[in-house]
Image (cartoon, rainbow, N blue to C red; front, top):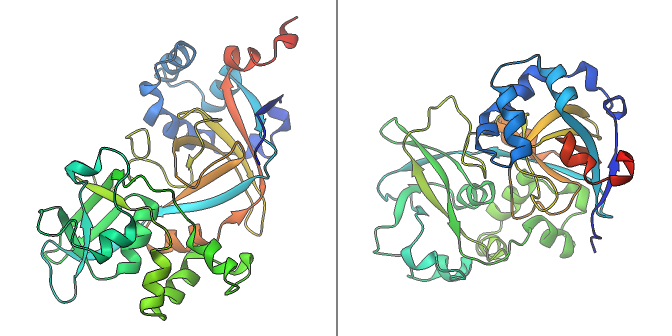
Length: 325
């Protein structure tokens, strides 16, 4: 059980690899959402950022590294923007629907995944945005919360998160471990895909173990070169944006990550997204980009380490009144 948050004041010298990072890349990502921060402490910093100062000097002058913990171990995972194959109309090949948010689905708790997929609750209501050729890919599109669909006419459909059915997310990977199918370190998105596809009705039932169901909206003004929209309704940036728990980490804040594992990653990220499975002070989901290669890279990530939030100096020192005496 997570504890109440505790705070440790650090210096930039405590951040392993800080001087070697490409601060300009993080600064450009920071500018994507900085204008939306209305808190006075943040607004002052954002006003300076628009004058394009030297990035490393900017972060060191206006921010203070703060380690926020809650008794839980650090866990890094990865996410990506899927690319699916689909059609605007239903065909024998494209038979799995991607739904818009129903009017009666915005009022809180709605039908479960099983109820929606096995019943006729949404049929005939014109809520289908598109049809795709793989129910497993459609499931993972919902897990990611946004994606692209390459349509049969050669165009590309961009989808963003519109809402969910109000049921708690349950991890399919954890369920496979609980059943004894795999050890925890063996589970990945590809492993889950292969298991589901090879099990027929049992595979479908496994997906329905997760009662959460996500609805989408079509994004008509998103350039192909930009990433999907994060929780701040701005595009996220590959390998510079992370999803966090906003209970502990303010959205829009710079966050220094020190990811362990076989592919270590020490760099400055920006907290621009959230996720139903991203809970805790030391929990982050790294955005890897778009497509299958990004998906494979993201699926390999399940690492420890630590993350350190950069807070405006005044905000940070308010957490440590003894430091001001």
